[in-house]
Image (cartoon, rainbow over all chains, first blue to last red; front, side, top):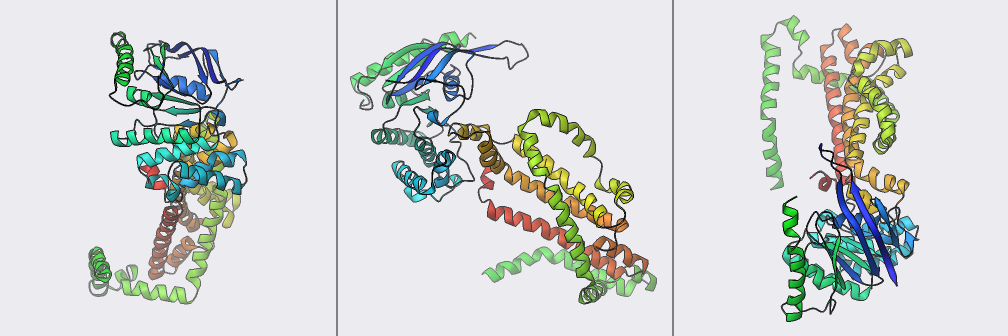
Length: 258
Length: 257
C-alpha cells in the first residue's frame, strides 16, 4: 500500500543572483513510500533534500512531475502531510496544550474531543506535566516533542520531518531518536525524514534514500536489514554505514568543482 | 530588606530634588517680583495645582482631553485591520503605500489650519488632529509586523490544515500583536502631543486650552500645572500600555530576542 508517490519530479528555481542562472535543484526524482514505513532522505546540504520535502508538503510546486499522497495529487499544504520543522516553529503565544491542539481546532473538533486527543499525545511525547507552559519556557528537546505531538494529532497520512534533531546537542539528539522509535512503536506512522546524519538514518529508517548533489537525484535506495533494531558497532551496522558513507563521499568531489 | 531597597531607589531623585530646591530658592530670593510672576516657585505651582483641582476645573479639562484622545484612538484603530491587509496583499500595499509615504511626513500639527476651516473649533477638529497622530504609527508598525512574521510559523499552520482566514487570524495577527502594541504606544504618545497643540488653538476646553487660557490672565502657576498634568498623563498612558502588554503577552519577549 502506497502512502506517497513522487513521480519524475523536477524543480527549477529562478535565479537568485545577478548572473541570471536558473538553479536546477531536483531532477527526475521518483520515490514510492509504503504505508507505515520510515523513509530517510540522506544527502549533503544543498542536495535539494529539503526542497523535496517542501514539494511533498505542498509549500512549493514542482516544475514538472507529480506528487500523490494516498492517491490524491498534492497541490497545496494540508493536514494529511503535517511537518516537524528543524526550528520547531511552535506558536510562541500558545501554551504546549494549545500548540498541540492547533490542528484539531482548525478541524473544528469539539473541545472535549480535543481535550482527549491532546492529553493522549502530550502523554505519548512525555509532556503531560508541561501542557500549561509556553514554548520559551521549554528546552530544545522538549520543544521538538511538542512539535512532534502537534504534527501527529492531525493523524497525517505522511509525517514529514525536516532535520528535526539537527539543532539539538549530541546527547539530546540520541535521546530524541530513541523517543521517536518508542513513539512510532505506539503510533505506527508513515514518515519521511530529511537528515544529513548517516547514523540517524540507520537508527530510524526502514528505507534510506541517498541523494546526489546538485542537481538532486536519487542515487540509491537502501533497505535497512533490521529496522530500528540495528545495534551500533556490530558488523552489520558498520557495513551499512560504510556503504552509505562511500555513496555520499562519491558525491563530494563533484560538488567542490561547482 | 525591601524597604531598604526602595530607599536606595530614591537616590535617582537626588538631582531632581536639588534642582527643585534651587528653583524654589531662586524664585523666592533672587528673582524680582515681575520675574517671579513669570516663574513661580514649585510651592506656588503646587498651590495653583491645589486650587485648580479642588475647584474641579483641572479634572474637567483632563477628562475632555482624555476623551478626545480615546475617541480618536478608536477611529485610528482601523489602522490595524488596514495594516494587516496591506501586509498580506502585495497589490493593496503597492496602491496605498505611495499615499501613505506622502501623507506621513506631514506633522499632524500642520493640519491644524485646514482642519479648523473644515471642522471649526471644537471636538471634531481636535479629534481629527489626534487621529492623524495616532493613525500612522499604528499603521506602519502593523504593516512591518505582518511582514516580519516568521515564515515557518505560517508554513506550520498551513500544514496543520489552516486556510487563509485561519492563517491571518490565528497566526499573523497573533504574531504581529507585540509590534502592533508598540505602534499603539507610539501612536498614543504622538497623538497626545498633537492633542495639546490642537487644543491650544482650536478648543474651548482641554489641557491645551487650559494652559493657553491661563496665559491670557497671567496665571503662570496654572500654566505649569497644566504642563505637568500633560506630562504625567502622557507618562501614565505609556506605562499602562507597557504594563498590560507585558502581562497579557508574557511570551512576547521570546519573539523579540
